[in-house]
Length: 302
Image (cartoon, rainbow, N blue to C red):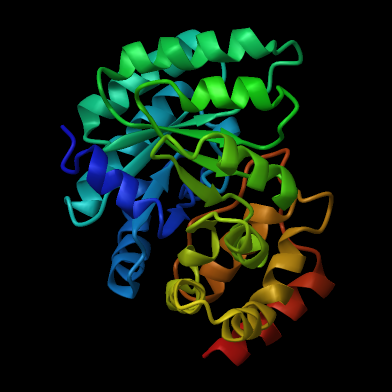
């Protein structure tokens, strides 16, 4: 069962939400044990909350049983040291089943992926969240919004759901985010920058706090340093630190963002933490030129 309560999860969301990779063995099967040193390094570096079954986890490539196994394994490996956020989504029945399984496994809160269904109505997504809330039986919920197409009125309604404590804003629209924050100021909602370190400064400038990160798998201390600078309001230092890791994020954005997890897992291999290949439709392996760039970049981080 959960180790951290609603208030503790809400506070952690103002920090770094580290999205963990899903390790595979040489035959493409999940091998959760390979995550242990990555989790330990992240916690030691000061990462505030870890996420299983997020996008960097290749959630959409996982079978239901694999998603269930991963959230249980990560809960065991965290051992109550920091909160665990378990991702749920896809079809509503699977999302509800995984919500209940994640709660039983020890997740402290759930992150609800924005439904990828081509036919999503504003009132339908509210029903979707309410069904998951019922299945979660009191666990705090974090909404993951990759766009604001459902409209501001629907976003306000979603934020008013009793169990919702945070929103991961993954749209490059800081002014729209500012409007959303203003409209929900009466609610204690954590507005989290959902586009990683590079977008954290403009999101902070309009009132968001904390950010998501896949970088924490590879260089958690660097991510923590960026967060510390932003918390101090030192945008110059934050931007200098971001400039150092920007080539890494640029590599992840290649191939229509299809190299996103590819680069993280390749970097882990180069560091001696083999978490296997990515699954299609992600790009694998890295192309030779990008791989050489990554090797040179990692040398500068040592």
